[in-house]
Image (cartoon, rainbow, N blue to C red; front, side, top):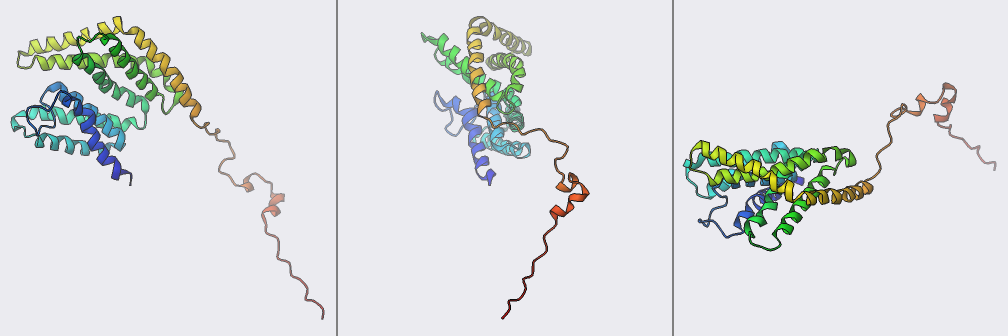
Length: 280
């Protein structure tokens, strides 16, 4: 019964989480286009939607073929030519990899936090692309960076509590690297059609340049994210039920294994008493 709602929800989540942001500026050129033809949108959108769909379904063997069918069907309905097989393969691989990480993340929330780092970084960068001349852009970007990192740190400690806090440092580093990954993919897409060396240099430069503004300008916001995550995890751990007591030697053994032989009469049933007939 669970899959009656999880599978349709995963199909909707793949599109909404992965490709709905591309429709904020209006529909693409074709009215039947469900996915874009940009390399960065296919990688980031497919991976984002796959992660969320995998989290909803929770099973790799069900989420992976489901996302393959949905991604391939969306590409076919978008009426793209068969000459774009490379872009189609990119979409399918990104979606399946994201679905695998999402499904495995239901068992280990630390893995789910790492998988969600790239989608969260992608969403955090979108207002910066749309509001380049806005007065409060630095505050908005810092707030989005803080909220994203706080959510990831909280998700990492969802199952195991404070024991997963050891992963906060590598998770923060991977979160910062996710911004650089997004910048590199966008630079590679912008340099499409140029020689391979130019594309590689553009992607490499954009990747390493993505760390500088985050570490120089937004380090107070990163510290604020950690300070916000600490009370959130503390409240979560306090709301969890206490762990079960450790097993003892006598668990799973009957009373006969504990009582001595001279006390076996305790477990025996009392004989039925017969009343004497009444005198008439």
